[in-house]
Length: 257
Image (cartoon, rainbow, N blue to C red; front, side, top):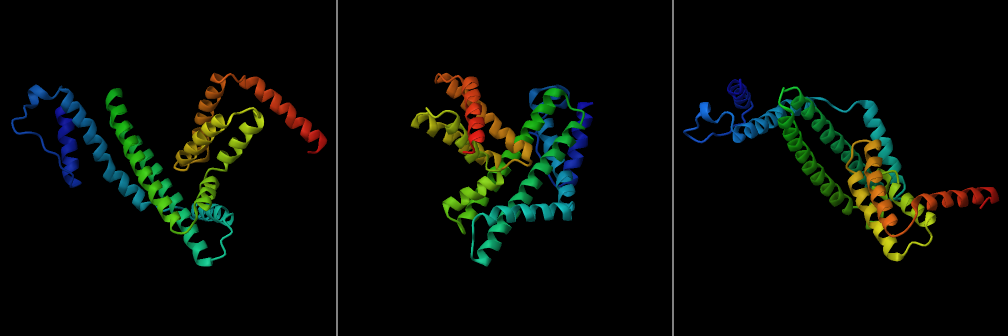
């Protein structure tokens, strides 16, 4: 059965002009159950799924509603920069729009490829290996897209303006959360503030590359957990600090401060 499966995939690969080579003298009757062949089959399935996925995503164009949503969202982000040069404004908005389109394509391609793998009937172990390969491919693509995006922004904007773009793409969770921690725990040391700032900044870089609002917030949620553990280890009672903070907020609201 496995031999027939490999033959089928090989035929599919040849039709897609993707080739792999098996060392001369390979004995299928002896080696078909080897770890090598099982791993090879997983890799072959992953590679074989890419042409079909690429064809689907290439043919599918963003809907007019999606294009409008991205245009409006990017305009809202760029408007904060107060750019007076119309040409520069247009270039920056186009860069932000292209980033959103690029992110959407990478995430959609990955979802389609994972779905294709799950339909192959592989074992749980082989399915997990194949999906891990796809995850690594997605991560590499996101890193490349991220770096190119920042490079394009640097051609038009200052570092402070680039930070504003990053905050706009992540709903300003970084500055809002950083301010909240300082307000909640006034006794934070400089070292503790620096660590919180560093982790939230790192979270923003990762959240920028996520494909949805929920996923962006999940990234920050993970880092908030890390920060809370860090502060708890430093001796802060986070539950108590949070309760006292809420009391102070209510008091300010009552007095109109």
